[in-house]
Length: 52
Image (cartoon, rainbow, N blue to C red; front, top):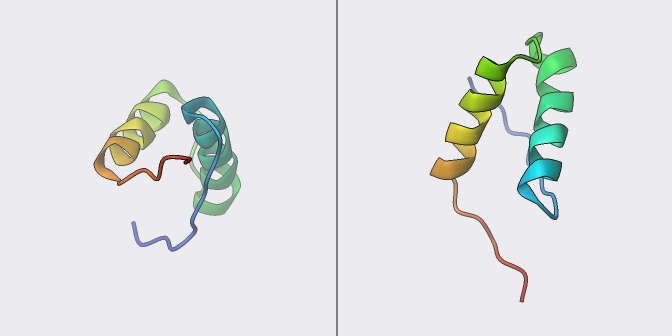
């Protein structure tokens, strides 16, 4: 999926909730364990900035 939205959060939990809140209405996904697992995989593949 080609999506250019950038989401940031203070925690992985916050990131997950923001990503799900985007995916459901915008990409017509359902909030399921499979969706959340797919998002976790995407998170693991992305470089994460660490707070100084």
